[in-house]
Length: 215
Image (cartoon, rainbow, N blue to C red; front, side, top):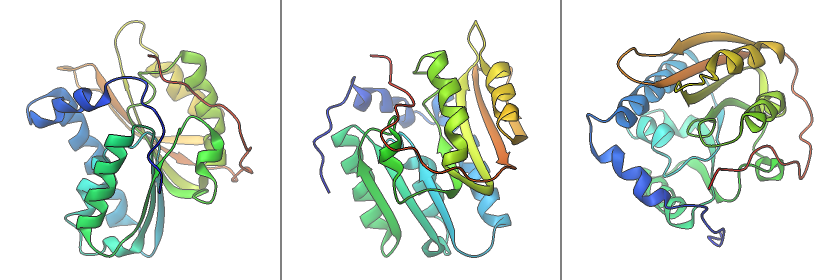
């Protein structure tokens, strides 16, 4: 496992907001984790999960830490920042026996997903608010390459003006996704969407750029 991918910005400091349980970032995390937990409760048997730009993995790993059935989850976490990816790997190690791989790689390139997709659950959290609008559209269009039929996609995006979330939701519909949930609290600007893929998986296109983070 290599940790040589250079970070684009100081994401270590960005994660500090998670230390405040009352922050909106922590609140958004709990919403994402609730949807992951509910999906696992409703989905028996072995499942595959891919988390793009996973950070230290707390979206998924925070849920698995409290589940006795976590060994049925095969997961791949993609994170470009070496220090943060290392923290995710340490958390995985602390979980004990589990089929979870942390890849220190650029999730904005399709090749990073090789061997991990199509998956039953795809997490696109913390991405759409940090990339260009056309990159969001491109990523939504490529989601069929990441998903099995019936898979769930959980995504997040702020709703600051100009609010792109109505367009994101429409893009998902255009690409054969049905919306199951859209959480948009009045007291904050974050949103969490849950989509179900109704189409057939598409072959993964190698070396295709989906998005690049804004510096």
